[in-house]
Length: 237
Image (cartoon, rainbow, N blue to C red):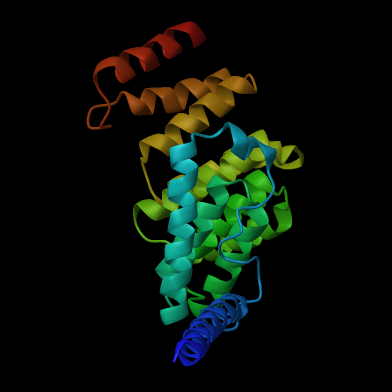
C-alpha cells in the first residue's frame, strides 16, 4: 500500500511537472510568434541606450509594463493602429528609435493615410536618426493628410528641422514658414518663428514686419507675450 501510494504521488507530481513545462514552453513559443506581418523590433525590447539607467525607476517600470500590455493587446488585434502608435511612443521613451520607427512603419501599412503616423515618423527620422530624406518624405505625406491646426504643426516642425539640424537647408526656413502662412493665415506660431528667424539672419525689416503682425488687434496675444514682442520691436527699430 505504501509502495502504491509513493508511485501515485510520483505519477501525479510527474504530470504536474509536465504540465508546468508545457505551459512554460507554450508561453515562450507564443512570445516568439509574430504579430500579424510585423517583423520589426520585438515589442517589449527597450533597447540598449545607457541613458535609461539615469531615468526614474518608477517611470521605467511603468513603460515596461505598458509595452507588455500593448504586446498582449496587439496579439488580440494586430491591426490596432493606436496601439502601434503607443508602442512607438514607449520605445522612444527608452531612446530605442529603431524600435519606434519599426512600430510606425508597420502602422503605416495598416493606415497609409493616417496623419499622425507620418508626422511622428518624420520627427523621429529627422530629429533623432538624422535621416532627412525620409523625414521630408513623411512630412510631405503628413502635410497632404493634415487638417486645421495640424497643417501649421507640420510646417513648424519642418522649419525647426531645417533651422537646427538639417543645416544645408537653413536658408529655406522662411520659405517653409511662408508656405505655412499661405495655408494657415495669421497663425501666431508661424509668424513668431518667422520673425525670430529673420532676426537671427539680420533681416531687421522682415523681423519687425512679422513681430508687428503679432501685436495687431485681434492677433490673439496679450499680457506678458505682447510686452515681450513690443520690446523686440523697439530693439530692432
